[in-house]
Image (cartoon, rainbow, N blue to C red; front, side, top):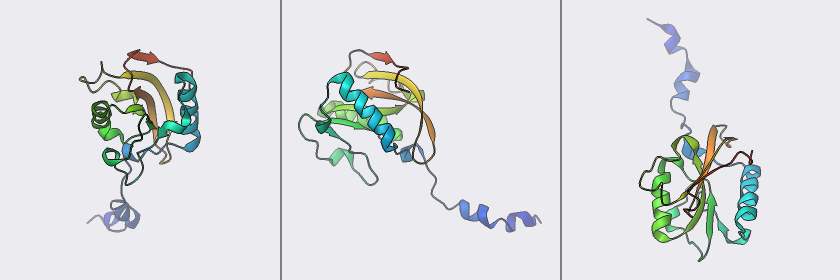
Length: 150
């Protein structure tokens, strides 16, 4: 009998702890502010129209979006395609964080939105390092590669 299996209390307890996923990648405030400042300056956006519907327990589909707002946020990556489709259908402007590896993974949306390939290593609040790019609601230009953010 392997007694090590029975004496590993920490390993036993670890199995029951909730695991962090890419949906738990909350953006550190200093990173968010850099992105927000860049977006506002690059596209002439008034920061007062920006909304952030993605937070623990939030419901982006029932969020109260003011007319003319811009969603600038880091959504749960696992449902990013669903989020993009929702915003396009509702004609809500968006600028969203997106994992670089799956930036073009929704073929039906590739020609409908702008993809900003940055591939920046962002260290999120849960310690995850994710190569991050962005997607935005305006489809022109279709692709924009940036190395100047980070």
